[in-house]
Image (cartoon, rainbow, N blue to C red; front, side, top):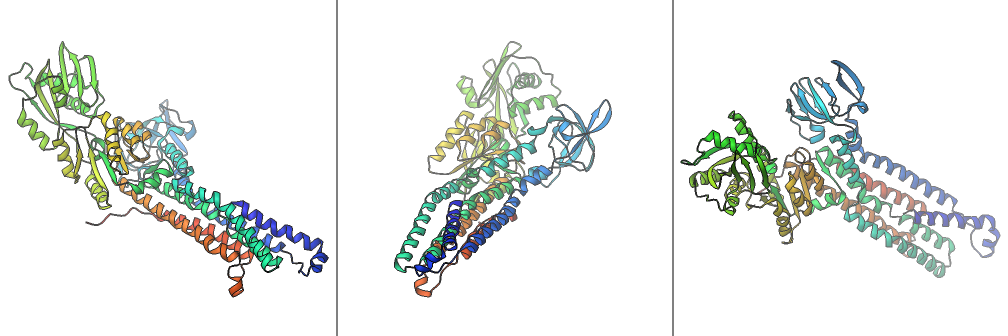
Length: 592
Protein backbone atom coordinates (compact mmCIF):
# COMPACT_ATOMS: atom_id res chain seq x y z
CA UNK A 1 0.00 0.00 0.00
CA UNK A 2 2.91 2.35 0.69
CA UNK A 3 4.30 1.76 -2.82
CA UNK A 4 2.01 4.33 -4.45
CA UNK A 5 2.63 7.00 -1.81
CA UNK A 6 6.38 6.40 -1.96
CA UNK A 7 6.38 6.64 -5.76
CA UNK A 8 4.26 9.80 -5.78
CA UNK A 9 6.18 11.75 -3.14
CA UNK A 10 9.56 10.54 -4.41
CA UNK A 11 8.66 11.58 -7.94
CA UNK A 12 7.65 15.06 -6.75
CA UNK A 13 10.80 15.43 -4.63
CA UNK A 14 13.30 14.08 -7.17
CA UNK A 15 11.77 16.16 -9.98
CA UNK A 16 12.10 19.26 -7.77
CA UNK A 17 15.84 18.68 -7.37
CA UNK A 18 16.45 19.31 -11.07
CA UNK A 19 14.95 22.85 -11.33
CA UNK A 20 16.66 23.62 -8.02
CA UNK A 21 20.11 22.60 -9.30
CA UNK A 22 19.67 23.33 -13.02
CA UNK A 23 17.13 26.18 -13.31
CA UNK A 24 18.82 27.55 -16.49
CA UNK A 25 18.16 24.32 -18.40
CA UNK A 26 14.40 24.61 -17.71
CA UNK A 27 14.40 28.26 -18.74
CA UNK A 28 16.21 27.37 -21.98
CA UNK A 29 13.46 24.82 -22.71
CA UNK A 30 10.75 27.47 -22.10
CA UNK A 31 9.69 25.61 -18.97
CA UNK A 32 9.06 27.19 -15.59
CA UNK A 33 11.52 25.82 -12.97
CA UNK A 34 8.68 24.86 -10.59
CA UNK A 35 9.44 22.82 -7.48
CA UNK A 36 7.10 20.58 -5.45
CA UNK A 37 8.91 20.14 -2.16
CA UNK A 38 5.88 21.48 -0.30
CA UNK A 39 3.62 18.94 -2.05
CA UNK A 40 5.83 16.02 -1.00
CA UNK A 41 6.15 17.36 2.55
CA UNK A 42 2.45 18.14 3.01
CA UNK A 43 1.36 14.79 1.49
CA UNK A 44 3.58 12.88 3.90
CA UNK A 45 2.37 15.05 6.78
CA UNK A 46 -1.28 14.40 5.88
CA UNK A 47 -0.65 10.68 5.54
CA UNK A 48 1.09 10.55 8.91
CA UNK A 49 -1.80 12.52 10.42
CA UNK A 50 -4.22 10.05 8.86
CA UNK A 51 -2.19 7.14 10.26
CA UNK A 52 -2.22 8.78 13.69
CA UNK A 53 -6.00 9.18 13.63
CA UNK A 54 -6.33 5.68 12.19
CA UNK A 55 -4.16 4.11 14.91
CA UNK A 56 -6.07 5.97 17.62
CA UNK A 57 -9.32 4.66 16.19
CA UNK A 58 -7.95 1.14 15.75
CA UNK A 59 -6.76 1.11 19.35
CA UNK A 60 -10.39 1.54 20.34
CA UNK A 61 -11.25 -1.68 18.48
CA UNK A 62 -9.19 -3.56 21.10
CA UNK A 63 -11.32 -2.13 23.88
CA UNK A 64 -13.07 -5.48 24.40
CA UNK A 65 -9.74 -7.22 25.04
CA UNK A 66 -8.67 -4.53 27.50
CA UNK A 67 -12.00 -4.77 29.28
CA UNK A 68 -11.64 -8.55 29.60
CA UNK A 69 -8.07 -8.35 30.89
CA UNK A 70 -9.08 -5.59 33.31
CA UNK A 71 -11.73 -7.87 34.84
CA UNK A 72 -9.14 -10.07 36.52
CA UNK A 73 -8.57 -9.65 40.24
CA UNK A 74 -5.10 -8.53 41.29
CA UNK A 75 -4.88 -10.50 44.56
CA UNK A 76 -6.38 -13.58 46.22
CA UNK A 77 -7.07 -14.28 49.91
CA UNK A 78 -5.66 -17.77 50.58
CA UNK A 79 -6.34 -19.92 53.64
CA UNK A 80 -2.99 -21.33 54.79
CA UNK A 81 -2.57 -22.99 58.17
CA UNK A 82 -5.92 -21.50 59.25
CA UNK A 83 -4.57 -18.03 58.47
CA UNK A 84 -5.82 -15.61 55.80
CA UNK A 85 -3.00 -14.49 53.51
CA UNK A 86 -3.35 -12.02 50.61
CA UNK A 87 -1.10 -12.98 47.68
CA UNK A 88 -0.73 -11.71 44.09
CA UNK A 89 -2.93 -13.58 41.62
CA UNK A 90 0.19 -14.98 39.90
CA UNK A 91 1.14 -16.93 43.06
CA UNK A 92 -2.14 -18.87 43.31
CA UNK A 93 -1.67 -22.59 42.64
CA UNK A 94 -4.08 -25.39 41.84
CA UNK A 95 -5.49 -26.82 45.05
CA UNK A 96 -5.21 -23.60 47.08
CA UNK A 97 -8.23 -22.78 49.23
CA UNK A 98 -9.44 -19.21 48.69
CA UNK A 99 -11.87 -17.11 50.72
CA UNK A 100 -14.16 -14.68 48.88
CA UNK A 101 -16.26 -12.07 50.69
CA UNK A 102 -19.31 -10.15 49.43
CA UNK A 103 -18.51 -7.63 46.70
CA UNK A 104 -15.11 -9.15 45.87
CA UNK A 105 -13.95 -10.54 42.54
CA UNK A 106 -13.31 -14.26 42.34
CA UNK A 107 -9.57 -14.48 41.52
CA UNK A 108 -9.36 -17.81 39.62
CA UNK A 109 -11.57 -20.71 38.51
CA UNK A 110 -12.48 -23.25 41.15
CA UNK A 111 -15.06 -25.34 43.01
CA UNK A 112 -17.01 -24.16 46.05
CA UNK A 113 -16.20 -26.23 49.15
CA UNK A 114 -17.86 -24.21 51.91
CA UNK A 115 -20.60 -21.57 52.09
CA UNK A 116 -23.22 -20.31 49.63
CA UNK A 117 -23.61 -17.11 47.63
CA UNK A 118 -24.91 -15.60 44.41
CA UNK A 119 -22.41 -14.69 41.68
CA UNK A 120 -22.69 -12.03 38.99
CA UNK A 121 -21.27 -13.79 35.92
CA UNK A 122 -22.49 -11.21 33.40
CA UNK A 123 -19.02 -10.01 32.41
CA UNK A 124 -18.10 -13.51 31.21
CA UNK A 125 -21.39 -15.16 30.19
CA UNK A 126 -23.46 -12.10 29.28
CA UNK A 127 -26.19 -13.27 31.69
CA UNK A 128 -27.44 -10.44 33.88
CA UNK A 129 -29.20 -12.61 36.51
CA UNK A 130 -26.89 -13.62 39.43
CA UNK A 131 -26.33 -17.38 39.77
CA UNK A 132 -26.64 -19.18 43.09
CA UNK A 133 -23.55 -21.18 44.11
CA UNK A 134 -23.19 -23.84 46.78
CA UNK A 135 -20.65 -26.57 47.63
CA UNK A 136 -19.81 -28.60 44.53
CA UNK A 137 -20.59 -25.79 42.07
CA UNK A 138 -17.97 -24.26 39.80
CA UNK A 139 -17.04 -20.58 39.96
CA UNK A 140 -15.34 -18.55 37.23
CA UNK A 141 -12.45 -16.19 37.82
CA UNK A 142 -13.18 -12.44 37.38
CA UNK A 143 -16.88 -12.83 38.25
CA UNK A 144 -18.23 -10.87 41.23
CA UNK A 145 -19.45 -12.34 44.52
CA UNK A 146 -22.71 -10.66 45.51
CA UNK A 147 -24.23 -11.77 48.81
CA UNK A 148 -22.40 -14.34 50.94
CA UNK A 149 -18.90 -15.43 51.87
CA UNK A 150 -17.59 -18.79 50.70
CA UNK A 151 -14.42 -20.81 50.28
CA UNK A 152 -13.44 -22.52 47.07
CA UNK A 153 -10.57 -24.65 45.83
CA UNK A 154 -8.63 -23.42 42.81
CA UNK A 155 -8.91 -25.77 39.83
CA UNK A 156 -7.56 -23.59 36.99
CA UNK A 157 -5.03 -20.77 37.22
CA UNK A 158 -3.06 -18.53 34.88
CA UNK A 159 -3.56 -19.19 31.18
CA UNK A 160 -5.91 -22.11 31.88
CA UNK A 161 -8.69 -20.00 33.42
CA UNK A 162 -11.88 -19.39 31.47
CA UNK A 163 -11.11 -15.65 31.24
CA UNK A 164 -7.57 -16.26 29.90
CA UNK A 165 -8.92 -18.67 27.28
CA UNK A 166 -11.59 -16.15 26.25
CA UNK A 167 -8.94 -13.45 25.81
CA UNK A 168 -6.78 -15.82 23.75
CA UNK A 169 -9.68 -16.87 21.50
CA UNK A 170 -10.75 -13.28 20.89
CA UNK A 171 -7.17 -12.27 20.03
CA UNK A 172 -6.89 -15.18 17.58
CA UNK A 173 -10.19 -14.26 15.97
CA UNK A 174 -9.22 -10.62 15.62
CA UNK A 175 -6.00 -11.61 13.88
CA UNK A 176 -7.66 -13.99 11.40
CA UNK A 177 -8.82 -13.16 7.89
CA UNK A 178 -12.38 -13.44 6.63
CA UNK A 179 -12.90 -14.78 3.07
CA UNK A 180 -14.07 -11.32 1.97
CA UNK A 181 -10.72 -9.93 3.18
CA UNK A 182 -8.89 -12.39 0.91
CA UNK A 183 -10.92 -10.98 -1.98
CA UNK A 184 -9.83 -7.47 -0.98
CA UNK A 185 -6.21 -8.67 -0.85
CA UNK A 186 -6.51 -10.12 -4.37
CA UNK A 187 -7.98 -6.85 -5.64
CA UNK A 188 -5.13 -4.92 -4.03
CA UNK A 189 -2.64 -7.30 -5.71
CA UNK A 190 -3.59 -6.19 -9.22
CA UNK A 191 -4.81 -2.73 -8.21
CA UNK A 192 -1.35 -1.31 -7.45
CA UNK A 193 0.24 -2.26 -10.82
CA UNK A 194 -2.91 -0.99 -12.60
CA UNK A 195 -2.65 2.38 -10.83
CA UNK A 196 1.05 2.69 -11.72
CA UNK A 197 0.14 1.98 -15.34
CA UNK A 198 -2.62 4.64 -15.25
CA UNK A 199 -0.21 7.17 -13.71
CA UNK A 200 2.41 6.53 -16.43
CA UNK A 201 -0.28 6.73 -19.11
CA UNK A 202 -1.50 10.07 -17.74
CA UNK A 203 2.09 11.41 -17.79
CA UNK A 204 2.69 10.27 -21.36
CA UNK A 205 -0.63 11.64 -22.66
CA UNK A 206 -0.36 15.07 -21.03
CA UNK A 207 3.32 15.47 -21.89
CA UNK A 208 2.82 14.45 -25.53
CA UNK A 209 -0.54 16.16 -26.12
CA UNK A 210 -0.01 19.38 -24.14
CA UNK A 211 3.77 19.42 -24.01
CA UNK A 212 3.38 20.53 -20.40
CA UNK A 213 5.77 18.80 -18.03
CA UNK A 214 4.20 20.42 -14.95
CA UNK A 215 0.70 19.22 -15.90
CA UNK A 216 2.03 15.74 -16.64
CA UNK A 217 3.82 15.62 -13.29
CA UNK A 218 0.83 16.85 -11.24
CA UNK A 219 -1.53 14.28 -12.79
CA UNK A 220 0.98 11.46 -12.28
CA UNK A 221 1.62 12.30 -8.64
CA UNK A 222 -2.11 12.86 -7.98
CA UNK A 223 -3.06 9.45 -9.38
CA UNK A 224 -0.37 7.68 -7.35
CA UNK A 225 -1.37 9.41 -4.10
CA UNK A 226 -5.16 9.26 -4.22
CA UNK A 227 -5.21 5.62 -5.34
CA UNK A 228 -3.34 4.30 -2.30
CA UNK A 229 -5.58 1.37 -1.19
CA UNK A 230 -5.00 1.81 2.56
CA UNK A 231 -8.75 2.06 3.19
CA UNK A 232 -9.29 -1.14 1.21
CA UNK A 233 -6.87 -2.99 3.47
CA UNK A 234 -8.54 -1.62 6.61
CA UNK A 235 -12.13 -2.28 5.54
CA UNK A 236 -12.43 -5.87 6.78
CA UNK A 237 -9.97 -6.35 9.70
CA UNK A 238 -11.22 -3.32 11.64
CA UNK A 239 -14.84 -4.54 11.46
CA UNK A 240 -13.77 -8.08 12.41
CA UNK A 241 -11.86 -6.79 15.43
CA UNK A 242 -14.83 -4.81 16.69
CA UNK A 243 -17.31 -7.59 15.87
CA UNK A 244 -15.43 -10.36 17.68
CA UNK A 245 -14.83 -8.09 20.66
CA UNK A 246 -18.52 -7.24 20.78
CA UNK A 247 -19.31 -10.94 20.68
CA UNK A 248 -17.11 -11.54 23.73
CA UNK A 249 -18.97 -8.79 25.60
CA UNK A 250 -22.23 -10.66 24.91
CA UNK A 251 -20.91 -14.05 26.04
CA UNK A 252 -20.25 -15.31 22.50
CA UNK A 253 -16.77 -16.56 21.60
CA UNK A 254 -16.06 -16.47 17.86
CA UNK A 255 -12.92 -18.42 16.98
CA UNK A 256 -12.21 -16.82 13.61
CA UNK A 257 -13.24 -14.19 11.09
CA UNK A 258 -14.41 -16.91 8.69
CA UNK A 259 -16.96 -18.14 11.25
CA UNK A 260 -18.14 -14.58 11.86
CA UNK A 261 -18.68 -14.05 8.15
CA UNK A 262 -20.30 -17.44 7.48
CA UNK A 263 -22.81 -17.11 10.33
CA UNK A 264 -24.89 -14.57 8.40
CA UNK A 265 -25.37 -17.10 5.57
CA UNK A 266 -26.78 -19.88 7.79
CA UNK A 267 -30.00 -21.39 6.39
CA UNK A 268 -30.55 -24.39 8.70
CA UNK A 269 -29.91 -24.64 12.44
CA UNK A 270 -29.63 -28.18 13.86
CA UNK A 271 -30.22 -28.30 17.62
CA UNK A 272 -29.19 -31.28 19.69
CA UNK A 273 -31.90 -32.06 22.27
CA UNK A 274 -30.21 -33.05 25.52
CA UNK A 275 -28.21 -30.24 27.10
CA UNK A 276 -28.98 -27.84 24.26
CA UNK A 277 -32.75 -27.47 24.04
CA UNK A 278 -33.14 -29.10 27.44
CA UNK A 279 -31.17 -28.40 30.60
CA UNK A 280 -29.19 -31.63 30.36
CA UNK A 281 -30.16 -32.65 33.89
CA UNK A 282 -32.57 -35.55 33.33
CA UNK A 283 -34.67 -36.85 36.23
CA UNK A 284 -36.39 -40.21 36.66
CA UNK A 285 -40.13 -39.50 36.93
CA UNK A 286 -41.56 -42.99 36.39
CA UNK A 287 -40.36 -46.48 37.34
CA UNK A 288 -42.55 -49.40 36.30
CA UNK A 289 -41.83 -53.11 36.79
CA UNK A 290 -43.34 -56.11 35.03
CA UNK A 291 -45.58 -58.14 37.29
CA UNK A 292 -44.90 -61.82 37.75
CA UNK A 293 -41.17 -61.71 36.97
CA UNK A 294 -38.33 -62.93 39.14
CA UNK A 295 -37.21 -59.39 40.00
CA UNK A 296 -40.62 -57.75 40.41
CA UNK A 297 -39.38 -56.30 43.68
CA UNK A 298 -38.88 -52.65 42.63
CA UNK A 299 -36.09 -51.95 45.11
CA UNK A 300 -34.13 -55.00 44.02
CA UNK A 301 -34.49 -54.14 40.33
CA UNK A 302 -33.56 -50.51 41.03
CA UNK A 303 -30.45 -51.71 42.84
CA UNK A 304 -29.40 -53.79 39.82
CA UNK A 305 -30.05 -50.94 37.36
CA UNK A 306 -28.36 -48.19 39.38
CA UNK A 307 -25.33 -50.38 40.17
CA UNK A 308 -24.76 -50.85 36.44
CA UNK A 309 -25.48 -47.22 35.50
CA UNK A 310 -23.03 -45.96 38.12
CA UNK A 311 -20.24 -46.99 35.72
CA UNK A 312 -21.60 -44.86 32.87
CA UNK A 313 -21.02 -41.12 32.28
CA UNK A 314 -24.24 -40.66 30.29
CA UNK A 315 -26.67 -38.04 31.71
CA UNK A 316 -29.47 -40.63 31.77
CA UNK A 317 -27.26 -42.94 33.82
CA UNK A 318 -26.64 -40.15 36.33
CA UNK A 319 -30.41 -39.67 36.58
CA UNK A 320 -30.91 -43.36 37.43
CA UNK A 321 -28.17 -43.26 40.08
CA UNK A 322 -29.58 -40.09 41.64
CA UNK A 323 -33.05 -41.66 41.74
CA UNK A 324 -31.70 -44.79 43.45
CA UNK A 325 -29.84 -42.71 46.00
CA UNK A 326 -33.01 -40.73 46.75
CA UNK A 327 -34.69 -44.07 47.53
CA UNK A 328 -31.81 -44.99 49.89
CA UNK A 329 -30.87 -47.96 47.70
CA UNK A 330 -27.43 -49.40 48.41
CA UNK A 331 -25.40 -49.97 45.24
CA UNK A 332 -23.28 -53.07 44.68
CA UNK A 333 -20.22 -53.93 42.64
CA UNK A 334 -20.60 -55.06 39.01
CA UNK A 335 -18.37 -56.99 36.60
CA UNK A 336 -17.84 -56.99 32.82
CA UNK A 337 -19.39 -53.55 32.35
CA UNK A 338 -19.82 -52.52 28.73
CA UNK A 339 -21.34 -49.37 27.19
CA UNK A 340 -22.71 -49.45 23.64
CA UNK A 341 -22.84 -45.89 22.27
CA UNK A 342 -26.36 -44.77 21.48
CA UNK A 343 -27.87 -48.07 22.66
CA UNK A 344 -27.29 -48.81 26.34
CA UNK A 345 -25.14 -50.58 28.93
CA UNK A 346 -24.76 -54.08 30.29
CA UNK A 347 -22.91 -55.80 33.14
CA UNK A 348 -22.92 -58.78 35.49
CA UNK A 349 -24.45 -58.14 38.92
CA UNK A 350 -24.40 -61.08 41.35
CA UNK A 351 -24.27 -63.56 38.45
CA UNK A 352 -27.18 -61.87 36.71
CA UNK A 353 -26.70 -60.23 33.30
CA UNK A 354 -28.37 -56.81 33.38
CA UNK A 355 -29.19 -54.84 30.22
CA UNK A 356 -30.36 -51.21 30.28
CA UNK A 357 -31.07 -49.29 27.10
CA UNK A 358 -33.29 -48.47 24.16
CA UNK A 359 -36.10 -50.60 22.79
CA UNK A 360 -34.23 -50.97 19.50
CA UNK A 361 -31.18 -52.36 21.27
CA UNK A 362 -33.31 -54.81 23.24
CA UNK A 363 -34.80 -56.07 20.00
CA UNK A 364 -31.31 -56.44 18.50
CA UNK A 365 -30.52 -58.65 21.50
CA UNK A 366 -33.70 -60.67 20.73
CA UNK A 367 -35.28 -59.56 24.01
CA UNK A 368 -39.08 -59.35 23.81
CA UNK A 369 -40.25 -55.75 24.49
CA UNK A 370 -44.00 -56.34 24.27
CA UNK A 371 -44.37 -55.92 28.02
CA UNK A 372 -45.79 -52.66 29.41
CA UNK A 373 -47.03 -51.26 26.07
CA UNK A 374 -49.47 -48.75 27.62
CA UNK A 375 -46.83 -47.39 30.00
CA UNK A 376 -44.36 -47.02 27.15
CA UNK A 377 -46.85 -45.16 24.93
CA UNK A 378 -47.98 -42.90 27.77
CA UNK A 379 -44.45 -41.88 28.69
CA UNK A 380 -43.37 -41.28 25.09
CA UNK A 381 -46.47 -39.17 24.43
CA UNK A 382 -45.52 -37.00 27.39
CA UNK A 383 -42.10 -36.45 25.82
CA UNK A 384 -40.18 -38.59 28.29
CA UNK A 385 -37.23 -40.79 27.39
CA UNK A 386 -37.98 -44.48 28.00
CA UNK A 387 -35.18 -46.87 28.96
CA UNK A 388 -35.79 -50.59 29.30
CA UNK A 389 -34.34 -52.86 32.00
CA UNK A 390 -33.78 -56.53 31.23
CA UNK A 391 -32.29 -59.24 33.45
CA UNK A 392 -30.98 -62.49 31.94
CA UNK A 393 -32.76 -61.84 28.66
CA UNK A 394 -36.18 -60.93 30.13
CA UNK A 395 -37.73 -57.46 30.36
CA UNK A 396 -38.20 -56.61 34.03
CA UNK A 397 -39.22 -52.95 33.86
CA UNK A 398 -38.78 -49.52 32.34
CA UNK A 399 -38.10 -45.97 33.44
CA UNK A 400 -39.47 -42.67 32.21
CA UNK A 401 -36.87 -39.90 32.32
CA UNK A 402 -37.72 -36.25 31.83
CA UNK A 403 -35.35 -33.40 31.03
CA UNK A 404 -36.77 -29.91 31.57
CA UNK A 405 -36.54 -27.36 28.77
CA UNK A 406 -34.19 -24.42 29.15
CA UNK A 407 -36.19 -21.27 29.98
CA UNK A 408 -35.48 -19.51 26.66
CA UNK A 409 -35.49 -22.49 24.26
CA UNK A 410 -38.97 -21.85 22.81
CA UNK A 411 -38.29 -18.11 22.53
CA UNK A 412 -34.98 -18.74 20.74
CA UNK A 413 -36.53 -21.20 18.28
CA UNK A 414 -39.32 -18.73 17.44
CA UNK A 415 -36.77 -15.93 16.96
CA UNK A 416 -34.64 -18.07 14.62
CA UNK A 417 -37.68 -19.02 12.57
CA UNK A 418 -38.71 -15.36 12.28
CA UNK A 419 -35.24 -14.64 10.95
CA UNK A 420 -36.05 -17.01 8.07
CA UNK A 421 -34.03 -20.00 9.32
CA UNK A 422 -35.10 -23.64 9.29
CA UNK A 423 -34.75 -25.13 12.78
CA UNK A 424 -34.21 -28.90 13.07
CA UNK A 425 -34.03 -30.98 16.25
CA UNK A 426 -31.58 -33.89 16.41
CA UNK A 427 -32.04 -36.58 19.06
CA UNK A 428 -31.22 -40.17 19.86
CA UNK A 429 -34.67 -40.60 21.41
CA UNK A 430 -37.48 -42.38 19.62
CA UNK A 431 -39.61 -40.29 17.26
CA UNK A 432 -42.61 -39.95 19.55
CA UNK A 433 -40.52 -38.56 22.43
CA UNK A 434 -38.59 -36.28 20.10
CA UNK A 435 -41.74 -34.90 18.50
CA UNK A 436 -43.28 -34.24 21.93
CA UNK A 437 -40.28 -32.07 22.91
CA UNK A 438 -40.31 -30.42 19.47
CA UNK A 439 -43.96 -29.47 19.89
CA UNK A 440 -43.16 -27.71 23.17
CA UNK A 441 -40.54 -25.45 21.56
CA UNK A 442 -42.20 -25.05 18.16
CA UNK A 443 -39.85 -27.12 15.98
CA UNK A 444 -41.46 -28.75 12.94
CA UNK A 445 -38.68 -31.03 11.68
CA UNK A 446 -37.33 -33.77 13.96
CA UNK A 447 -34.48 -36.18 13.18
CA UNK A 448 -35.01 -38.90 15.79
CA UNK A 449 -33.27 -42.16 16.75
CA UNK A 450 -29.93 -40.82 15.51
CA UNK A 451 -27.00 -42.59 17.18
CA UNK A 452 -23.95 -40.52 18.16
CA UNK A 453 -21.88 -41.97 15.31
CA UNK A 454 -24.60 -40.94 12.83
CA UNK A 455 -24.84 -37.26 13.80
CA UNK A 456 -22.05 -36.04 11.51
CA UNK A 457 -23.52 -38.00 8.58
CA UNK A 458 -26.93 -36.45 9.31
CA UNK A 459 -25.44 -32.95 9.15
CA UNK A 460 -23.66 -33.88 5.91
CA UNK A 461 -26.98 -35.08 4.46
CA UNK A 462 -28.55 -31.69 5.21
CA UNK A 463 -25.57 -29.99 3.56
CA UNK A 464 -26.11 -32.15 0.47
CA UNK A 465 -29.50 -30.43 0.14
CA UNK A 466 -27.54 -27.29 -0.71
CA UNK A 467 -27.98 -25.62 2.68
CA UNK A 468 -25.53 -23.73 4.89
CA UNK A 469 -25.89 -25.71 8.12
CA UNK A 470 -25.08 -24.77 11.71
CA UNK A 471 -24.94 -27.48 14.38
CA UNK A 472 -25.54 -26.63 18.04
CA UNK A 473 -24.49 -29.17 20.68
CA UNK A 474 -22.81 -29.69 24.02
CA UNK A 475 -21.63 -33.28 24.40
CA UNK A 476 -18.59 -35.32 23.39
CA UNK A 477 -20.79 -37.20 20.93
CA UNK A 478 -21.68 -33.89 19.24
CA UNK A 479 -18.05 -33.02 18.42
CA UNK A 480 -17.92 -34.77 14.98
CA UNK A 481 -21.18 -33.09 13.93
CA UNK A 482 -19.93 -29.70 15.15
CA UNK A 483 -16.79 -30.15 13.06
CA UNK A 484 -18.79 -31.32 10.01
CA UNK A 485 -21.21 -28.37 10.07
CA UNK A 486 -20.45 -25.18 8.16
CA UNK A 487 -20.69 -23.39 11.51
CA UNK A 488 -20.34 -25.39 14.75
CA UNK A 489 -21.89 -23.73 17.80
CA UNK A 490 -21.03 -25.22 21.20
CA UNK A 491 -22.87 -24.70 24.45
CA UNK A 492 -20.26 -23.30 26.84
CA UNK A 493 -21.71 -25.25 29.76
CA UNK A 494 -20.96 -28.48 27.86
CA UNK A 495 -17.77 -30.50 27.38
CA UNK A 496 -14.34 -29.14 26.45
CA UNK A 497 -14.23 -31.48 23.42
CA UNK A 498 -17.43 -29.98 21.98
CA UNK A 499 -16.13 -26.46 22.58
CA UNK A 500 -12.80 -27.30 20.90
CA UNK A 501 -14.59 -28.67 17.82
CA UNK A 502 -16.85 -25.65 17.41
CA UNK A 503 -16.49 -22.31 15.62
CA UNK A 504 -18.66 -20.33 18.03
CA UNK A 505 -19.15 -20.93 21.77
CA UNK A 506 -22.13 -19.69 23.78
CA UNK A 507 -20.58 -19.29 27.23
CA UNK A 508 -23.88 -19.08 29.11
CA UNK A 509 -25.56 -21.95 27.25
CA UNK A 510 -28.61 -19.77 26.47
CA UNK A 511 -29.93 -20.49 22.96
CA UNK A 512 -30.78 -16.82 22.50
CA UNK A 513 -27.01 -16.46 22.06
CA UNK A 514 -27.45 -18.07 18.62
CA UNK A 515 -29.82 -15.27 17.65
CA UNK A 516 -27.33 -12.68 18.92
CA UNK A 517 -24.43 -14.36 17.06
CA UNK A 518 -26.30 -14.32 13.75
CA UNK A 519 -27.43 -10.72 14.25
CA UNK A 520 -23.83 -9.73 15.06
CA UNK A 521 -22.58 -11.53 11.95
CA UNK A 522 -25.12 -9.72 9.79
CA UNK A 523 -24.26 -6.35 11.36
CA UNK A 524 -20.52 -6.98 10.86
CA UNK A 525 -20.93 -7.99 7.22
CA UNK A 526 -23.07 -4.92 6.51
CA UNK A 527 -20.35 -2.82 8.14
CA UNK A 528 -17.64 -4.46 6.02
CA UNK A 529 -19.64 -3.82 2.83
CA UNK A 530 -20.03 -0.17 3.81
CA UNK A 531 -16.29 0.05 4.42
CA UNK A 532 -15.48 -1.51 1.05
CA UNK A 533 -17.85 0.97 -0.60
CA UNK A 534 -16.08 3.89 1.10
CA UNK A 535 -12.70 2.47 0.08
CA UNK A 536 -13.64 1.93 -3.57
CA UNK A 537 -15.66 5.11 -4.12
CA UNK A 538 -12.66 7.30 -3.34
CA UNK A 539 -10.59 5.46 -5.93
CA UNK A 540 -13.31 5.14 -8.57
CA UNK A 541 -14.14 8.84 -8.37
CA UNK A 542 -10.68 10.14 -7.49
CA UNK A 543 -8.38 8.42 -10.01
CA UNK A 544 -10.04 9.86 -13.18
CA UNK A 545 -10.13 13.36 -11.63
CA UNK A 546 -6.48 13.07 -10.57
CA UNK A 547 -5.59 11.87 -14.08
CA UNK A 548 -7.00 15.18 -15.43
CA UNK A 549 -10.22 13.98 -17.07
CA UNK A 550 -11.98 17.25 -16.10
CA UNK A 551 -9.11 19.54 -17.15
CA UNK A 552 -10.03 19.89 -20.86
CA UNK A 553 -13.68 20.70 -19.98
CA UNK A 554 -13.57 22.75 -16.77
CA UNK A 555 -9.88 23.41 -16.31
CA UNK A 556 -10.03 21.49 -13.00
CA UNK A 557 -6.90 19.72 -11.85
CA UNK A 558 -6.53 17.82 -8.58
CA UNK A 559 -3.72 19.21 -6.44
CA UNK A 560 -1.53 16.37 -5.07
CA UNK A 561 -1.93 17.86 -1.58
CA UNK A 562 -5.72 17.50 -1.82
CA UNK A 563 -5.24 13.96 -3.15
CA UNK A 564 -3.15 13.11 -0.08
CA UNK A 565 -5.80 14.59 2.23
CA UNK A 566 -8.55 12.60 0.49
CA UNK A 567 -6.56 9.37 0.76
CA UNK A 568 -5.94 9.91 4.48
CA UNK A 569 -9.59 10.81 5.06
CA UNK A 570 -10.75 7.62 3.32
CA UNK A 571 -8.78 5.51 5.81
CA UNK A 572 -10.11 7.47 8.79
CA UNK A 573 -13.70 7.20 7.51
CA UNK A 574 -13.40 3.42 7.15
CA UNK A 575 -12.09 2.93 10.69
CA UNK A 576 -14.64 5.36 12.13
CA UNK A 577 -17.44 3.47 10.40
CA UNK A 578 -16.12 0.17 11.82
CA UNK A 579 -16.22 1.65 15.31
CA UNK A 580 -19.99 2.14 14.96
CA UNK A 581 -20.24 -1.61 15.57
CA UNK A 582 -19.39 -0.90 19.20
CA UNK A 583 -22.98 0.30 19.55
CA UNK A 584 -24.36 -3.11 18.51
CA UNK A 585 -27.16 -4.39 20.73
CA UNK A 586 -29.08 -7.67 20.21
CA UNK A 587 -32.56 -7.00 18.87
CA UNK A 588 -35.79 -8.77 19.76
CA UNK A 589 -37.01 -10.48 16.57
CA UNK A 590 -40.58 -9.40 15.89
CA UNK A 591 -42.70 -10.70 13.06
CA UNK A 592 -45.01 -13.42 11.83
